[in-house]
Image (cartoon, rainbow, N blue to C red; front, side, top):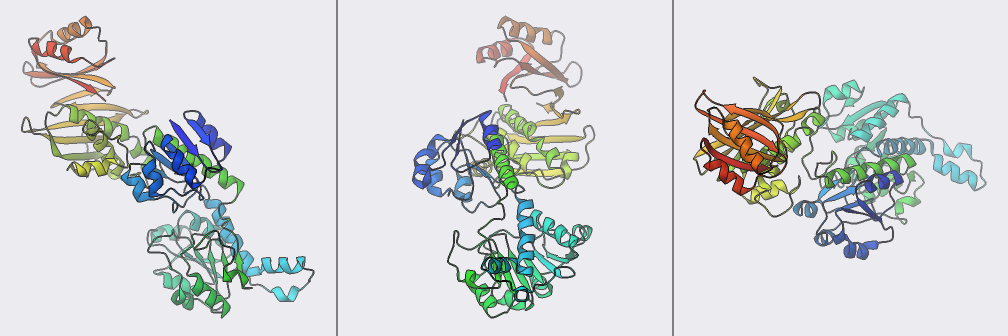
Length: 528
C-alpha cells in the first residue's frame, strides 16, 4: 500500500510508515497536484494547509484512511469521506500541552502588557509607568470547555493562585470538584464572573459566533478574553468594537475566522495581543502529532479502527481498550454466522453478557456487521462504510446488554434468522486467558471450545462410534491437514457436530464425499 504525505511530517512518523508501506513525501504538490496524484494512494497524512475536498475524495478511488497531524479537521470534508468509506483520524492529544501553555502565555502577556513593553523598549523608549499591568493571582479564570487543553490550563491557573470557573455540560460536577474547579451552569455565568475568559471549544455551527456583542457586554470592563482554540468562535467585528470602546480591558488571540490574515483592524489596537496560530507550534507537539497521525493511518490500513477515528465507532471512556480486544472475535462470529445460514434474515441480534456488557460496544456492533456483510457486498468494508451498507441492504441490528453470564467472564452471542429452515442460527464466542485468545463456544446448536482459524470445517453427524475416524480418513485421503478439533454432542446416541480447523480450504468435492458418507448429515467449509 502507498501513503502520500504532502506536508512536513516528523521523521519518526515517516520511518514508522516505511516499515510497512511505500511512502511518498511530496511537499510542493499543491491542490492541482493532489487531484492528479491522489488516486494512486491508500493513505494520506496532512496538516492544516492541505484541503481534502469532495472533489479530491472523488478522485481518491483507492484511499482508505486520512490522518490529520493535529486536532482540527476543518480542512477535510468528513461527510464525503464517510460516504466513500474513508476513515478520518486526527491526533487530538498531540498538542494539548503546547496549546495550554500558549493559552497561559497569552493570558500573562495580556495581563502584563509584555508585547507592547517589548516593542517600546526596542524602539528606544524606557516607559515603565506606561505599561502597568494586573496580577492574575486571586483573579477568576473562566473556561468555556474543560477538555484536554482546558484541564491543563486550569491546572496551571490554580498553580498561580487563581480561582477557576468552568462551563462544560459534558464534565460531571464530581470530576470538576476533584480538579478544584468550580462548575458554572451557563456560559453567561462564566462571562459575568470572570476576570479572564479562555475559550476551549471546537468550531461547530453551535459555537460559531459564541462570543458576540451580547456576551462581550456581560463581561467586566476589567476582563480579558483569550482565544487559542478556533477562529470563528469570536465575532471579530464585535470584539474590535468592544476593545476600542473599553467594554472589556483587552484580548489575546491566536486564531482568526480567516487564516492566514495580516490586516485585521484588531491588530492596530493597543489592548490586544496576537500570534499567528502558534498554539501547536512547538517541536515536541509537531513530532507528537506526526507520529500519532502515522500510527492512526497505519492502524486503519491494517484493517483495524484507529483510536482517534473521527467518523468510525471508537470505544470511549472506561474500558475502551478492553472492548477493542473483542473486535476481531465479533467480526469472525459475524462471518461464521453468515456462512452457516442458508438464507440469512434481515435482523441481526447481538447480545453482550458479563463484563463486556458494562461498556460502550458500538465498535463491536460494527465489527459483527462487517463480518456478516463481507460475503454479500462487492465494496471493501471498513468501520466507516459498514453501517451505511448495512442500512442500504435493509439489515436491522438489535443489541442487548446483561452483566450476568453464567459460564464466562464475557460472552458475545450473535443470532440470525434462517429463512431456509425457519429457525434461528446462533454463534457465541469469548476471549480466554491472559492473552485474551478468541474462542468459539457455540455454533449449529452445539457447545464447542475451539480457537477460530482462517480455514474451518463444520460437520453435523450422528452420534455413534467411528465418526471422527471417518472424517480424518476422508480429509487425509485428500491431503487436508487437521489443525484442531472440537466435538459437540446432544444426548448420547442422538446427534453431534464437529468444528475442525484445517490448513487450507476444503474443496466442494470433499464436502460432497463427506455428506455421502453414512453418518454425516451436513458439511460446510468456512473461511474467516
